Length: 188
Ligand SMILES: Cc1cc2nc3c(=O)[nH]c(=O)nc-3n(C[C@H](O)[C@H](O)[C@H](O)COP(=O)(O)O)c2cc1C
Image 1 (tube, rainbow, N blue to C red):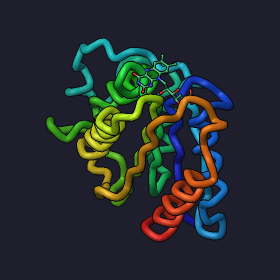
Image 2 (cartoon, helix red, strand yellow):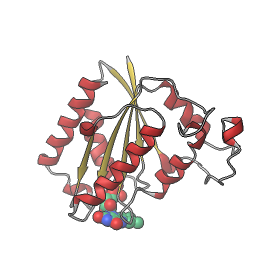
Image 3 (cartoon, protein in one colour):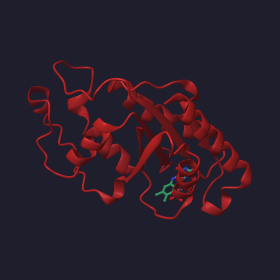
């Protein structure tokens, strides 16, 4: 069995993001994958202080819940990160999470590393209609994957515009999410 870690950046439970996640996980092949979901807002993740001591120590000096999440990430074969647009960007929870991976960033050496061979998928949603905002969110998530050497491809992402509430996840959109789950089933 392979492990998929779903990382939910929305702090709102039972909203549109949760609905997309539940359709996605329902359609993930349970004979092939063990799925685990992390709702970032359930965890105490402190802000990076910019001290850069991690450049020498290869670990963050802040002690909080991040270590447990890194432990889950080490076990995962693939990640699916989903973020709604908050002010045209990823949510604050996801930004704080990403900043704390500076010890793992491949722009400096030595650095901490996750085990090789992981794949990264991204999902964005927003209320407005212009896709540019969702593409920016996906780019931020893929930037994170790239600096951690997590493999991704152009079609490893989807986005949804015009979504404010979970009731707006129509059958049409559920079908799109199902197809994305099938891509994950086939690619991981
Ligand atoms: C604080 C906040 C900021 C938001 N900013 C934007 C925005 O800049 N652009 C946009 O299209 N939608 C914005 N939205 C709408 C959310 O992206 C949208 O409602 C999404 O479906 C929320 O997902 P949820 O139901 O999981 O909370 C914002 C929502 C909140 C709560």
